[in-house]
Image 1 (tube, rainbow, N blue to C red):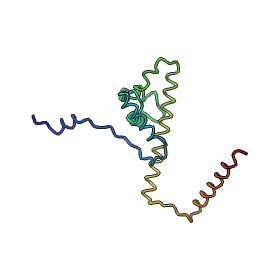
Image 2 (image 1 turned 45 degrees about the horizontal axis):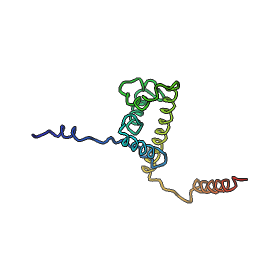
Image 3 (image 1 turned 60 degrees about the horizontal axis):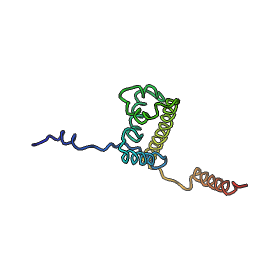
Image 4 (image 1 turned 90 degrees about the vertical axis):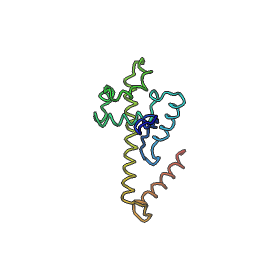
Length: 155
């Protein structure tokens, strides 16, 4: 029996891909790797927070606004965000824990996105380090002072 290309595409399970190119300056990619490993091993793809949840968290914030956790969580389109917390619902401070987690996770995503944008801009401007530039001399001096302070920390 001949199947259409659309049916073949549906039959082939697509791997979810969402990436932030932060250049490894944040812990986001190591978190994603650990969370994906845990989700794969336990077969609990939706119960363990990972990059799929981050994607939907960002989508919810785009739709509902910055730090509007309650609106995002109550929207049925973003029900996936509530899955990892189902086991914690019996705890007394459940909402506080959940909101703090979402805020921390969003700050990490926000930081990674800012770095991604800075790297994109630097690549666009084709920026390179000029050792003769005064800011580089200041950076070198700061590194020396920081090293000195660390070496004398015991005093």
